[in-house]
Image (cartoon, rainbow, N blue to C red):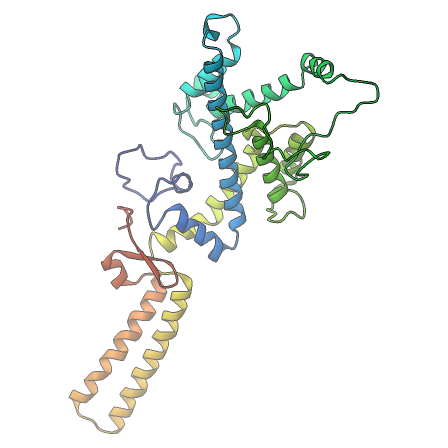
Length: 352
């Protein structure tokens, strides 16, 4: 496989795309993300792995949106913050925003720089995770806990309610975190911290726990680390899923993506169409041979026997299309099959 480094925007790609470019939606039909999804669903029968990768990427986008809105709300509510001495959170948010697009990303979003200095520097996704972990620690710090106890009138018999979860829906009659107006959800906020927590738990309970609805197979060490980080440490930052995301990416790159390129970049028909062409080719050749022998035994004229060329031609055409996964007529017309008898124009220049 080629390097995962994406082609700079605006330049033509004089090669086949790599998996990261496909997952990042930087490719066109027939090697786009939609084609890869169909291939994973219909051919590999392992679309849950791709869905997991996409859901983790969506969780990352949700965290970025939350941090950007938090920064915006801080600047709006405290315009003189930069003039004061307390600028730690603001500086972290500014650094994250300024360097968000400063480095190339790999499967887990980590910077892939080769210099020693950049290797030591945290990527912007790692800074995002560090900021979210710091937010969790600040919420559970002794000062905040003391203030919370005083504001709630903590009595010897009072107990703290369990943390809300998207799995439990509501606790003691309180609404779900996704429906409640929490402290994080202000007029400037469309993403609350509870939404990030619910997103992380949804990924855990949908794909990772034993017996989950769409369980994927991962090394036990990775599963244990993720489960402990979410359920025991209360983490929901994107870095929790980095090891699993990289493992799934490498598995798809090794097991599924080469076959996808052979089927979609070097061919233009799908498996049901291949089977149909195999059947039609065999039937055409059988008809051609049978008709040729009959015309010979009946001593027909040469002009009459020349018509047998047509079934021979059709038979060879269909069998060759089946063998090479390529329909020459569709290729010359610039089309490729997405699904059985559903064709779309080839838009990727190098493939065309």
